[in-house]
Amino acid sequence: MELSVFIATSLDGFIAREDGALDWLHGDPGTGPPPDFGYQSFINSVDALVMGRATYDVVRGFDAWPYGSRPVIVLSSHPVPIPAEVSGTVEHMAGSPAEIVARLERRGWTHLYVDGGKTIQRFLAARLIGRLIINRLPVLLGRGIPLFGPLPGDIRLEHVRTQAYPGGMVQTEYRTAVLRSPA
Image (cartoon, rainbow, N blue to C red; front, side):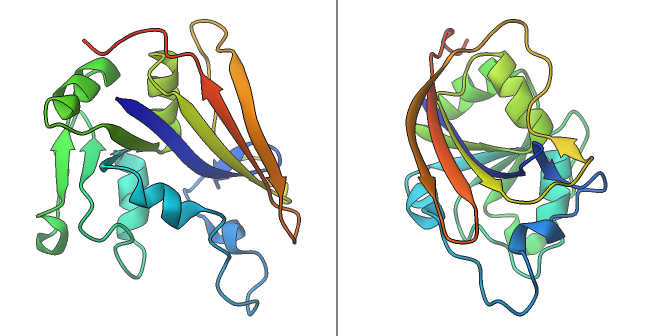
């Protein structure tokens, strides 16, 4: 099973403000909708999303549910309230990254989108993420929720491509060596 990350960070490596706010992602107000940067093609390639509870709580605060009918697995060791309007696509799951991947693989899924700071960190530490697409925006936040955290050892990355976009956003894709198979 392939596990991928598609995420935006500030130039100083934060994925959100300390309170989870993402207001800095869209630049100056009044400039129109942000470009796609390949997101739609990416999301169309995944079977499901796996995200942590904090990310789910932020997304639930959006004006509209952004994932349509695509399955979303919310990871938490505590119960997760799932509103009726998304109850057909959102489910709660607990366990180690390897256990989660093994369960989802048994469903026949082949490509998962892993999202959320702590969740990405846990899946990287378990050596399960094979592809990272990082969109670095030209903004310094100074503090916030970091994309990366402590790891049990080095994770070597293979550079796949880098593309600069008007406005200063730089998208870089890496491949990793997935060292362990799910349980």
